Image (cartoon, helix red, strand yellow):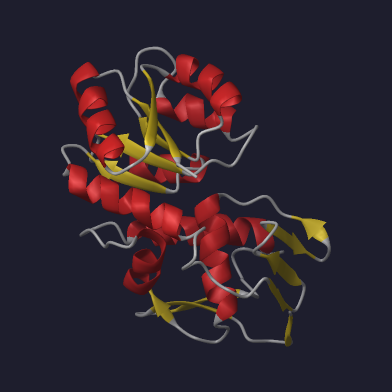
Length: 233
């Protein structure tokens, strides 16, 4: 089935360029020129992925993400001309799965898109159900719970947790995790992993400042604790 991508940007030339590039890759492309228009369309068209510009005059990208994330969990790649790390971190905290800084190569963007889709395709993690101590993850239904209480995660948060839980005790560098999530590592983008880890801890740890499950291995990266390991088919 053809994947549907919505591109949201108020620059007509960029909107046209991205539409052409993505259509040539075989995707169906929907477009919107501001967050308000996009919010209406996403409620009716249900895209598989959203490419979102941050700076728009009518409902900017941040506000769009705040409203959109209340309703669904569509993967989002954020486009930003801002170089301030705080702006990128804000986007990730609001629910973006990835970001690309303008100006960018269309090939890089396509690689990010393909990586996001690959995570739900044949190359996705194969174990259907993972359970470590009180943390439960179901890859088929995209459900996560801690102590039998449901936890809502973004696509990237879910995939990151699934990677760590599939290999408990194994240490992953930030670059390793980023490559598994995005399929490409861009200089300076490893900070993305730190933000996703921080968000994950705030959702699954009883004390995020003293994590029980997602451990930091200083100077290397992260691992999921192998305490009380059990798994189900």
